[in-house]
Amino acid sequence: MNVLEQLLFSYSEKSIPILDEALPIANYVSLDLSSSNSDLNGVNITDPNECQFYIDSILKRQGGKVAHGGYLEQRNLYADKSGFNGKTQSPRNIHLGIDYWAPAGTKVINPLDGVVHSFKNNATRGDYGPTIILQHSIQGLVFYTLYGHLSLESLDGLSVGKEFAVGSVLASLGTEDINVNYAPHLHFQVIQDLEGYEGDYPGVCAQVDLDFYKKNCPDPNLLLKI
Image (cartoon, rainbow, N blue to C red; front, top):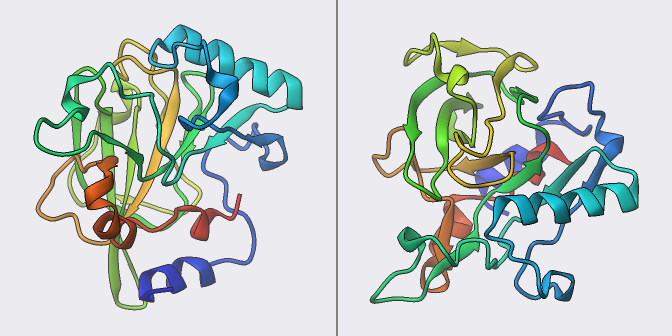
């Protein structure tokens, strides 16, 4: 593990909630949206209604309330979104964060003390919709967390430098029309170097760029332990 990965892993021995505590971590179930999942054969996963129906079936089968997963998962979820299909390189279809699929309006809980670095409504179809990036400094190491697919109300009253304590409510999940054509969920990503981005950062990469992004965007579950 690199320095940031070690820091994330050692931050807490316990699981850290990322959504409303009314949805206990014991009710989170793993979700596989990879292109290799044969259960998705015949499912138009790019359609938010079909995607939600599939997620609901998994939750019902396993008695869960929140479906989660997707770090470094290669997906067909972006196949209908032109911004993910490069003309000179392989398509961007490898997911760099973890998704938490839950009802629109679900509260997002801040997992670390931090301040607002930037925020933006990335409203292009297939993007994040409303997005918040927090900056953190622990033991002298600065890094960032990104929260995508939020409600518009989540951006109200924000300002660069605004402080959010660990455990505080940061935002809420957006509806399909606001989070630009996805079933409601939180995209949570850890980023070491924002590379000059503000209110945005790639959440999906191409195979040719994977080595860089694996290092720059470590597994968020090193921190959350869900």
